[in-house]
Image (cartoon, rainbow, N blue to C red; front, side):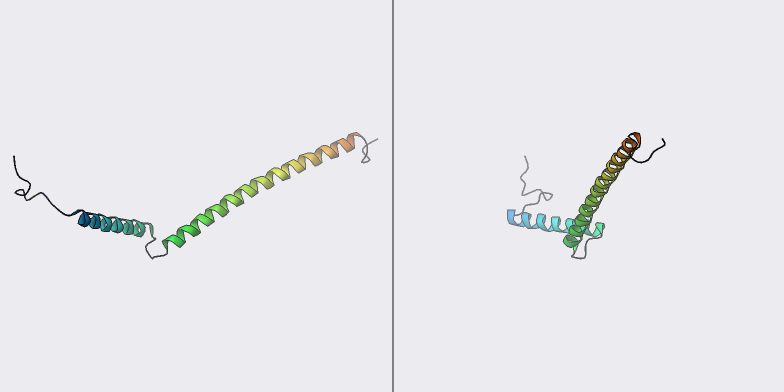
Length: 96
């Protein structure tokens, strides 16, 4: 069996040094990812908040548009029924 101290390919480091190395690697990876997305200028959090606000506004507008469409269609159908009933009952001066 070989001793790890004799094998030059084995790296030994303290836990604190490993943690620091991993932290720096994670930060660099995050910075590269933000740069790839075009959010590297330091205002990424604000940009993402604004994008979320825009998305929420779009969802609200879409929901309101559907509600308005349904209300207009319902009102139109009810108005047509009232006019049809009035004509049928000769309340609106229909043909005698």
